[in-house]
Amino acid sequence: MSVSRRNLLRGALFGAAAAATAPALSACTSIATASTDAIQYWNPFTGGDGGLMKDMVSQVERRVSGLRTTTTVLDWGASYYTKLAMASAGGRAPDVAIMHASRFAGYAPGGLLDPWDMDILREFGVTPRTLNPKTYKRGTYQGDQYALPLDTHPFVVFYDKEVMAKADLVDSDGKLLPFDGPEGYLDAAKRLRSVNKGGLGPVYGHVNDTAQNWRMFWSLFPQTGAEFDLSGKKAVIDRDAAVKVVTFMQQLTAPQCRTMDPATSVGSFASRKAPFIFTGEWDSAAFSQIKGMDLGAAPFPQIYDKPASWADSHMFVLPHQDNPDPERRRTTHRLVAELFKASFTWAKAGHIPGYLPVVESRKYQHLEPQIDYAAAAKSPALDPPAWFMGAGADVQVQLCQSIQTALVGANSAATAVDKMITALNFYLGKPNPA
Image (cartoon, one colour):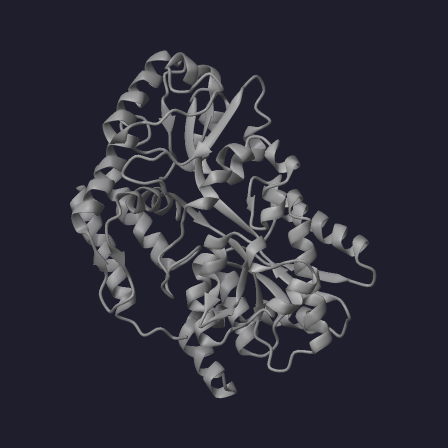
């Protein structure tokens, strides 16, 4: 992509947001382009994830003589992607960065990423066959590989095996039994409320959250097999199926979760007032510490015709550089290959590693509760590929708000779906700035 094209992109794609973050970007790029032999690595990992990634990088540096990494942790959210795009467009990009698979469609087509050299990765023991095929495929563009899956992080369920057994909802090994459709799930929820001393059944926090309702919707809708196509100028969506899903979500949240936010739902489960929760696998580390609970976990339950769980993936990408140094690029490939091999550490956060030898290892097969929902990585419901979709995107916020109006009783399911379609068509009517 030419400099003028990238400059145009800078103005068109990020506009006011870019201007607002310019001071921060300036600080970041000065770090990224510092004269050093260390590989410059940008990621949005803080908290537990940040600590584990730091451990992984340290492991690699101890194992590979001479390999040094400078990690820059940026605030997670839309601003992260603005800074990443501006760094690529400005030719001052880090050597490697993390990108959600759901944001990939907005970056690779515009020349903001460079392709991986799979032959170099093969030299270091990483091939396409060693990576999760579902998420690996999402990182492909025009025959080249632009993104490599560090993990899959799906929407799953956790439960208290003891209470679930009283309601006959688990087998003798504590594994979740099938719900046999929407009515079967609603009957199970009723039974769970009746046997739980706390009085709560399944909990799901969604109010004022910018992602949860989309995760729930996109776990259920793909299970119907109905059409949801964002490849044209208008959204082609099976409206009846969407209304059916949102109507079920209304039933799923009534009566106890209609106005519940995520913090309340997590607190209810952690305090053992609720025996079942819909949430992300990233809560597994905290839930594993609940005293007295025999913790169970499973992929998002199959309610309709086929299994699916909303999921995203942290991907390694090479932000575009005009004239990358070949040896530096080679070292970057080595760094990422070694991070894949160290990703059992990443699994401790709850994420399902994208590097299959780790998932298939004896050690991972005994890692609980992670192994109980690991199958979700085989049928991830990734976001529809469109430049405006993805983690932290404005449209995701609008979709969540539309669904919320139905769940709290302010709108019908049909009205909520119409609002969703209107929001999607608004973005489809805008040119892809990349």
